[in-house]
Image (tube, rainbow, N blue to C red; front, side, top):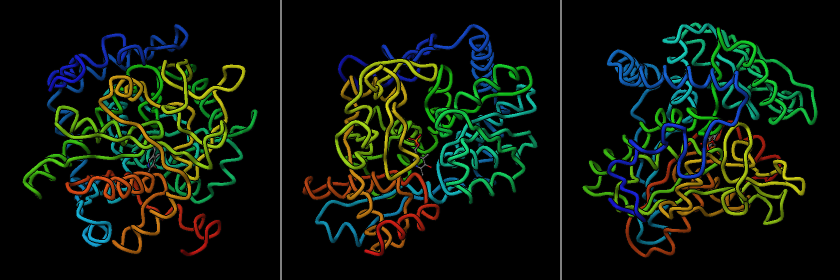
Length: 405
Ligand SMILES: *Cc1c(COP(=O)(O)O)cnc(C)c1O
């Protein structure tokens, strides 16, 4: 399918290009030593992703360990309540560990094993990426160092416990505000010393090339499965698909199954408390071009041009930028990026729980809220929503801050 001069039939062959660019976004903005480490990972990835043995092992892991394919559920009661549009969800909440993140962590850890590395290193904010990577490390018998700000360690006690039980070293970062940004810096610094024995495992389609490409490719299974399952279930393609966008990994994988189809695609960012800088994390809607954490993309900046403070009720979505491929797809117009605020999210969280018996992650509830909005405006047709994770981690927070609705 030709769209604004881009042929989506051959899209994956040319995007990103050899230097890791999606149009003007992406690249490798790190010092020379880390550049060499990135080049090593890129080369290993290109060798391994063509290897039959690697592909077979990843397939087996997905089936026997992760429980894939995850199903698609038809939200019959909710659809009937809203009108004629039929809503469906792809159930990444049923993937092992309860979210999509394990899809790329298993891929990254398998790559580490094939490269002969002994250790995986990463940062974590809310702890979701840390738990997924600790799970993958335990499976493969790799050491696992997770850098986490001391503020987050206090806030996210259950996830810290999970990582420790899984055998990971949780390394406290006390510098600066002691949250995600400082944890990223500490993890990168550690990796710069240890890259001969270790591999850095990023948590989304972010960071220097090859990570945005590699993480998208590992998440492609979500879109691939969803397309096939949806056609099998209904005999046709959905009219629209929706996913939430933090860094953008669940969206990138899900969208990648449908880019070449006549399907409307919506990426949903968190509007939090409102449009003022600091009250949201909608980088693609309100941000400008800039470089951070090793890549060029669209980001929210403060008055000094530094990454701005961001906020969302969903801790998995509060990052001041998004993956370079999303910036590219936005400029191209192939994906429409829109926003959902905290209030609408909490409403959707309760609505899906009450009407369908599915408690969504607050991140995923952003996509559900948008799907419900679409259902009201479209009149007829179908919408497939990527339910990126389950809401167990959010229940206490929602009850304490919003009460039962
Ligand atoms: C981390 C997380 C997200 C946001 O990350 P993306 O890279 O944007 O997908 C979304 N949903 C859940 C359940 C998460 O844990």
